[in-house]
Image 1: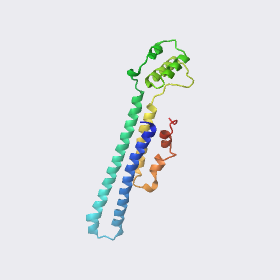
Image 2: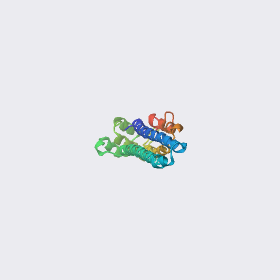
Image 3: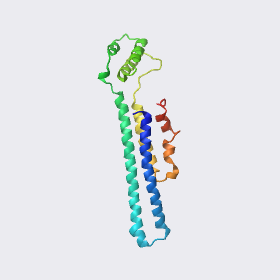
Image 4: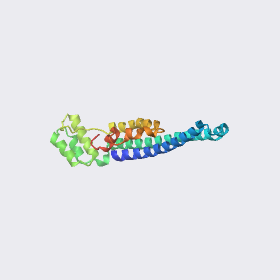
Length: 195
C-alpha cells in the first residue's frame, strides 16, 4: 500500500472508532447527569442508572481497544510491507548482476545499470550498494532502506494512544490536531516527497 493509502486506512478506521467512543461518552454524560440531578430516587439510581453508567464505561473501553487493535493492525501491515520491499528478490536478478561483480565499474556504468533497471528494486538496490561499497559518488543518489519509514509508522502507535485517551472528550478535537490536514502526520503520508 502507498503511504497515502496507509494514512487513509489508518485515519478512517481510527475516526470510526473515535466517533463510536464519542457517542458512548455522550450517552454516559447523560446518565451521569441523571444520577447527579437528584430527580430520581436513590433506589432507581442504584438499581438502574449506576449499572447503566458502568456498562457504558465498559463499552467505551471495548470501543477504544477495538480502535487501537484496528490501528495497530494497519500499522503493522504497512511496516511489514515496507520492510518486505527492501528484501532482495533473486527472481528479479538480471544479467547486470554480473557487471556489478566486476571491480572496474565507473560511475557511468552504475548509473546505466540503475537506469536500465529502474522498475526493478532488487537490481537498483544492488547497484546502489555496489556504488556505496566502492566509494563511488552518484551525485547524491544513494542506497536507503525503508527501515526509517517503517519505524516512523510504528511510532504512530503512540499518537493513536493519545487520540484514544482524549476520545471521550470530542470537544477537544484531538483527532484533527493529531491527524488532520496540515499536521505532520498528514504531510508525511500524503506528500509523496516527504519521506
